[in-house]
Image (tube, rainbow, N blue to C red):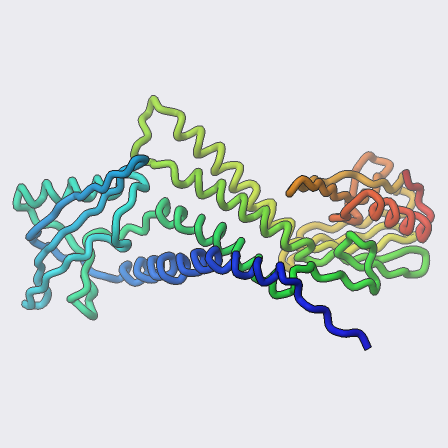
Length: 352
């Protein structure tokens, strides 16, 4: 009887190393991002009431690299004949330097205080003691926090899962596997083969790609809108560059993760079904005489830690020149060629 494999000592070290990263990401999500979204959603039903400012100030905190601003205020308002006082200024407390939200709000409140003008505040109708001056969600600040959630939380939780498995990647099952580097199944049928490439293939790789896209998208969103002048195109170029690339990468990662492919190829022809989240996205049906050849094509390359992994797909090239994918996400040319040979041997179609 084989003894269960012991976890490597390095796995425990990796777990300890990952804990602070996971704590930062999960803590930011549970203590900041989710409470902010919850407060914003419930404040949409609060009612506006005019309030008298008792105090208002814009405070700054300078460091060697940046200056953060914090707005403080105290105000009095009346609801149903009852007088209340509040100090909450915005959904998120504390200071920051994301955009000019704090500066604009502080200057507005200081000016209203000097002029003795009332300011509108939002009051909870079911609990009038709860009030806030500005209930804006601030997508830029939220995106900035999500960078910590995704980067620190994603890296930390991923390393913890890896460490819990003993520091070794799980081995794929060999039964009905197309090839060692292929997350799909192949089954022989009379005169050919049928294959299924389910959603979630190489999910770790594609989630990492999605995180990269999210970070780029967040950088594009974080470019301050308020500081853009009509003659200053640099912030627009930065937003379009980072945000556009990040959005495209995020969409591509989602598609790569959520799509599935079913293929049947035999002497009678080729039939494929491409689905996205289980919904039919695209299908092909081609008679056998229309198939000119099958061939291996390079799809994409992933480089990390001085390692370069190339992924391939197999295409059916029709006599009309059209190309249809029949196998995808094949890691390494050797496995791709082996699968191509197996399909060609079972179907009799030319391979090259």
